[in-house]
Length: 397
Image 1: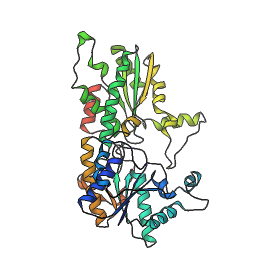
Image 2: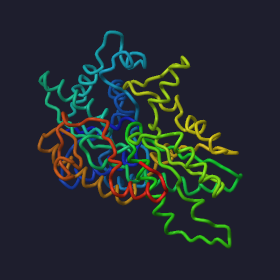
Image 3: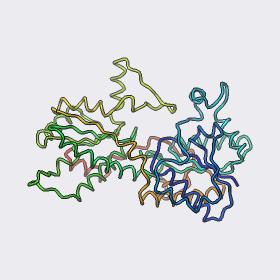
Image 4: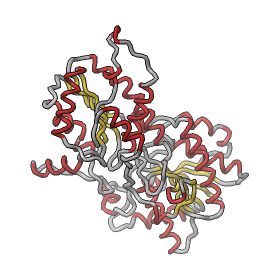
């Protein structure tokens, strides 16, 4: 039996830990197998580059729970995007990347492939599985869901997302102290989340929950409101910039600073339309997504609000790379271990799919059919805890 692992897409605080959990789960099942990992995701699969894990590896694998990132590396490669794969030198002109990847799996005699990634990673795995079955090769593909955005349909909670929110809160605990560096400061905390505001909302809640445990003293010029959040902007909410500008001007006048939590996907359509009017190029990645780093939402919001609220200094800080690169917290480790155990059971039963907390089954950890896996899961901004938070900071949804 030959079992391979593949991590792909952006990082999340679960990748190395998921490999550890899978290896431990196979060990508990007393399975004798050869384990390998394709290096740098689908890129490594196309290039035939992999790492063979030594037979004694399970004795030391627990160390991976304390590391972020992926020990076997990631990349953003879409097997159905022939042009991009050719451009990256992963295939020769005229080659079909899906066919080349499938042939590599056959050559390596892989019987089980575990993919750890988001919707793009797992839908590519589904395409591979389908292609191989149609061509007479029996491969079991079992995916584990990771994304800090928590935006995979129909999965309630992705691996690593809770840790990312926790780390984003820790990040802002230090950054917020910059409001003492100058008068009338606007601080924008830009959080990852292309189409889904869950991570921004969850990060804000964790930050405010931690803030509630701290002591403040007016006699020492420590006012809780100076450390609190003044606005939370996410893709799912309509943002009336003029109305919010007036509200935040009042906040600035009262406490000499304003703190905004911003999802990187908020107002993207407005930013893109403005860029088009200015004849600016809109760059896309291999998956057809707008490259958010290029359009820079945080800076755009800084321009919108700085003048309106009379900010003397504006600071835009991104917590994405800090939070997504962290080692998983205890809550995520528990979910990772449970998910890996279920994934191994499914693999041994030769059942393909993605193991996750299925919202169609009341959040029960289940094997989800690949045809049900999609991106773009929206955050329900009407949820009680989020609406309560908006009420407390004075923001109307």
